Image (tube, rainbow, N blue to C red):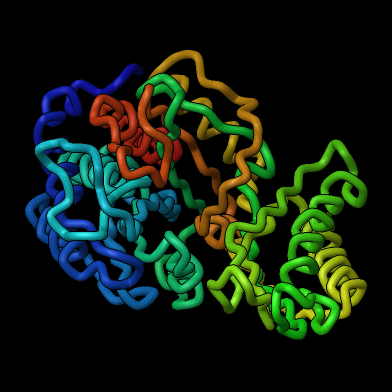
Length: 388
């Protein structure tokens, strides 16, 4: 079955929802207007089993099938939050909230799940229940984890869970997926290299924290090149280097480093953290400085389950032939990982075409992908929960 005709008919309507969401971005858990919009749309479709406040500001809605002899329930998830970025797209539907924009396509994810919900509520052509999960705070807040901790999976007896994310530089509306680790664990660090400040003309009177920090930044790259198996992925990136002075003739007392460590394997994750601490502490000590380390583990690896991955790909093949089933892993992080740790499921990528990259001020979701995305969500339910 190709893209469903219903989504060709409602494409313009769903696009209008997406662009409304794009114009009104909200951050983290502060998605109250977005949730209000989602709830209003769901109720207009005739969906009344709606619960808000899950995982602080998440929304869960239930669509009952034409029958429920299977006793099975499938969860479909979309994220709702935006990013603290000033938009530079120049489009008519640009953000009206200064300093906030949908630079990751969550407006598109939410709109596509709404489109699928409208169709599923109209047809009810499945045997079981479909649970719609509209999640806050994917962009660093761990909203997926909050919803799981709030008992969502048990409360609605969700047995499998599926999600989807757009992918720039991949043909619009086409699908890609892989077995196992798809997206990386995303850990964060903040390091203070404390030395002894001095006059820049008399460095021998101090302990140069700048020099120590520079060597720490370089030495950290040895984790990937000399500690981790070359066929396994790890990224150690120092993204901020900031001293406590801004003068040409003062050597600072302290330098702050911030950054991220990305891995696709829990054993590599453990190794990377252990080596990070050793490299930072001993390198700083070599330059007569001390290191204070705050290392925070973030989202875990997003791991697709084997059977559900094959099923998700087979469904995508019905919608758009030619699914890429061996997509290389991506080192970005994703808190859908918490839901996949709680239940079997899979995370699908859908092409966004030749767009700006994610988290870029010129990014915009490609509305051409909407019919395929809606069809995939709907077909998942109808195929997994067939009537008769």
